[in-house]
Amino acid sequence: MRILDIDLDFFVEGVAHWRTSDSGRLDGEEYSPWLAADALSFLEQRCLLNGPLPGLALEHHRELFFRWRDGVEREALATPFHVTHVDAHADLGLGEISYQYLMTSLLFEAPEDRVRPKEGQAGLDDGSFLAFSIACRWISDLVYVFNEGGGQDVFGFFREGFDPTANFIQLAAMTRAEMEMVAGLRGRPRETRPQRLEPRVPFAEVPWRDFQADAPFDLIFLTRSPAFTPPQSDVLFDEIRGQFIDERAGGQLLGMAAR
Image (cartoon, one colour):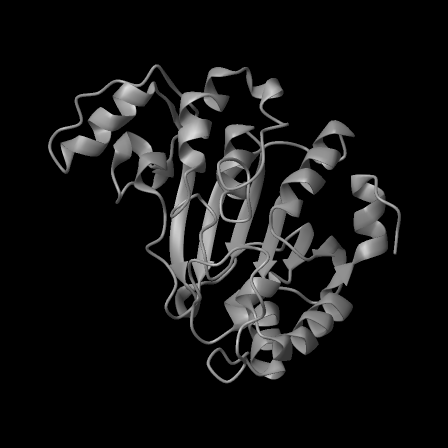
């Protein structure tokens, strides 16, 4: 199964950082949204969208973890699935402290027991939901498509061998002492052996101008991320939602009441 995951902030000029979900909206003059024609052209030509797909429109990206969990638990969403993540941010935990909980606690639990992690800045949040989804072993492979000013924001501890250039995500269960040792190596040979390594997940970072989907998608999700988008982008949110998302079918698939 192939999932297209879109954050509205991808279609905003400039990338905002160091904001929380309760921050206000961005200034539309400083962060201007794409023209609707350009955004729709990208989705049609680069993402191969030609009509509505089952999916949902959400406010905050962390909500997607719970919607996927609903689908997995109902056996309506087969795992592992492919994700193309079209976003101004990787959402793999950089700039947060959630990695400490994920690596030193959650990954020591059985995969089936990881699906209800603690939440908040020290746990599952908007900026780390993909890392937690990988920890649940839901994702087979991940493509991160970023806009101008995005990219280069993947937490190095989550890459295979702690190598910031590796083309695989491989989460490692470690003690805090082992984690501190890795952090102190600073480019020297990686001598620390984690307690446990998760399966490797192929990972690609692609600038938006170079991206071309190699096959159509089965499901689509769109997130507004209000703290990272200006009010002027809401028109585009509604346009994408109306043209490409069948929320009734998405709600039925994931066990939610249709809007």
